[in-house]
Length: 60
Image (tube, rainbow, N blue to C red):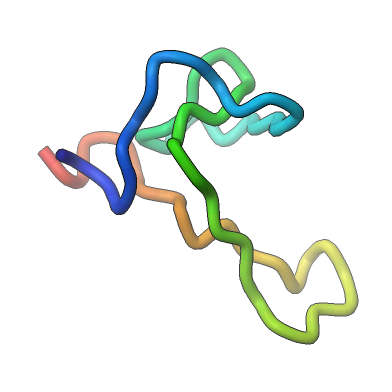
């Protein structure tokens, strides 16, 4: 299984993702079974990070 979590056939409802270089990306939606957003105590959007992100092809 490439990635940290399973990639599922359907997308996560309500989660839009435009990072087309991610293993879990599918037509502006996230196909990860679950996602994890970091960082604690973030005060702005720029201070957050999708910890679920895995570059396409990096886990082959």
